[in-house]
Length: 111
Length: 114
Image (cartoon, rainbow over all chains, first blue to last red; front, side):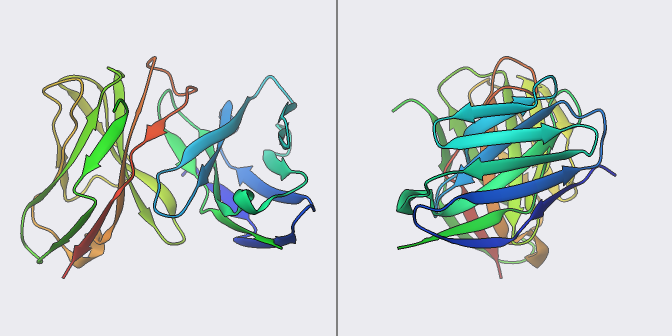
């Protein structure tokens, strides 16, 4: 069935450095790829998304890249800050309403 | 406050009991979703609803029942709770009825079945 693999499961970076989280999806028909951030005790919140007709999208310190041929998409966070510490989830849409989610990456920003 | 709210936030129940998790949204979003979140699995869709009185199964529907008599409410019922249903449950809503719009999540309900 449809699957989204997310790596790494835990990522620890020094404050100010960049962080990259990678996802691979299985359904070549997927055309929408959101990234969500989940802070402790809260529900996930959308931080950025990308559609399949775009290769890259940026929003301040956050960027997402998409390689449709390889079925890869990645989240890039530059100049990391303590408030970036959270769990990040990627997802891929495989039908008009259903998202398949990655297992999550715990991002730790070291002071 | 406007938004999406879940209740209760925490629940402990015994095996075999029926338990209902509540979800209420104030945006009149047409789509609503129930997910469960387990370590190592991300979020898995249990049920979704496209509108009042329209519901359908997601990835892991067994053991759960939903209803949606009003647009703003989407309760999830565990008919006979099992330990494997111990999880954190999230309700979400989105609009318009397409997959590529932001889904707004509630705070979650942590359910423990003993």
